[in-house]
Image (cartoon, rainbow, N blue to C red; front, side):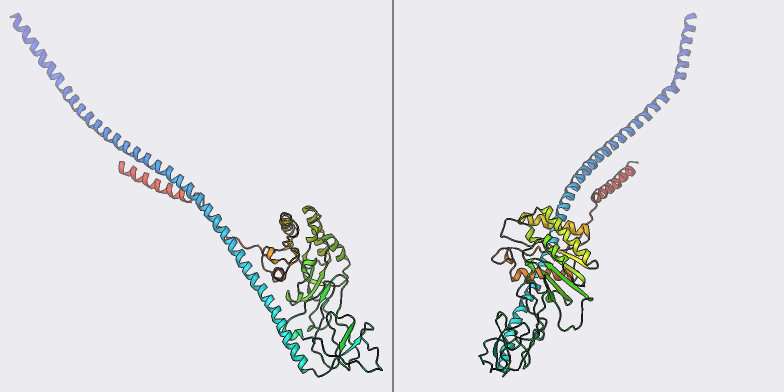
Length: 435
């Protein structure tokens, strides 16, 4: 009895324990299943994040590569930009040299045309002039006849008659730096005098001429060139003053400008000597432009700094004498008689600095090279003189000598910003796809 009751109690307890623990077991099982599902979800999330990280690494690699390429391309762009700018500068210089050569060729052609027309007009004048020429000695400056009672000695006309340079729109080139060309030249008539170039001991004139007024006016330090078709005193009118050494000797001032020209040539003198001579210029001039071409004779003896100091003193003297004029300082031209190439370049660079510092205009002559020199390797030939005149004409016409530079503005971070924008868009797309 007792055994059966104990057995019954044990069975009842087991049933109660099974009933009590059946519900938690099911819950644990369900929890395990939910944990498995969460684990699988987490694993998929981890895999997706791993893919995102891989994509991020790829993007970072692409970013670094893009940055490297950007730097490389920027360097190439800067190099190409500098090369393009140098080509543009060379093109501008070549165009300027072409214009200068065209103008120089035109000036030389005009000189040749002047000579050709002068010869043809002279021949026509000799054919049409029936008045015989006579030779009388040069007894005084007023060109009077000395033997008025005696019969004149008839000679052959072995001289060419002068031509009217105004008729062919040309001017007479001066022979010497200390003499001025005639202000007016005309065809010979019955009462005019002909002064033969190169003949100082005799004068050739028609029979009935008694006196010939002097046609040349010389200045003690230079030449004054006037237009004979403009009567009256023009000292108060705007004019152009050209001051220089022997280099400007063959410059014909009337071809530089239609204004009244005053040319002062000082052969063999340095800048400080020319400054002293300028003090002695006693004329009431009101120039609109003053051109200075000095310093060539300072190069063999003076240091570049000393040379620039003397040039600056000369410019200051000229500016004080002509305060209302635009001053153009001409650079020193090429010379090959001495080893002065480096010195000339240094002095010309200092002239540029001096002009920018004091507000002067710079007249460059970079197109004058060794082919523009005569046999002395110092002075200019016809080509060099023409190119020198071209530089002066550019200054008088107000043309700029420093060509305008075209700047290309490239942003350093232009390609980098575009790459970053693309990366940002890619990251946003990946983030939305993961969610």
